[in-house]
Length: 120
DNA sequence: GCGCCCGTCGCGG
DNA sequence: CCGCGACGGGCGC
Image (tube, rainbow, N blue to C red; front, side, top):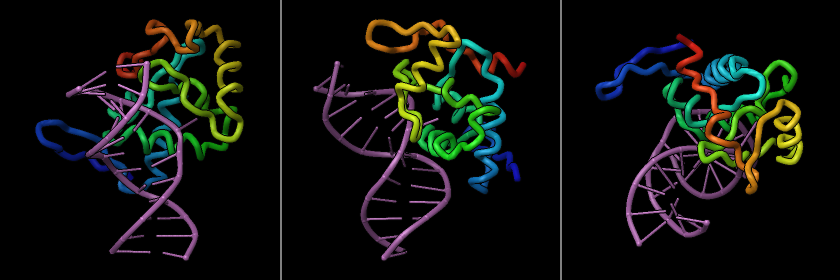
């Protein structure tokens, strides 16, 4: 179920049921191209929810093959976690895809894909 | 119900 | 570069 509503002067999409929100998150994550990343926050803004919830959804993602959740990182460029497999594994996956990390292990600004842009 | 958990963010110092 | 408060909703008791 999807609900469109007015929040202040903004129109946002809401998913009253947590499971539906997760499904929407998974769909968006699949749009991230190989070799690029996006942040929990950007997905959250697009769906009208909070970054923490997006993270929770991803942490429960079982279909690691179809949903590349390793391409979702902190808005600061830090990698964030990767469930039971650990951040090290996440780092390796990104390296395999050619994502550059700086000296402090952060993703550079130009590796971020704009989901909004991808959707138009 | 309440408290605690979570793979966050953005602002202020 | 921290520290901190707010964020939404599931889950166990």
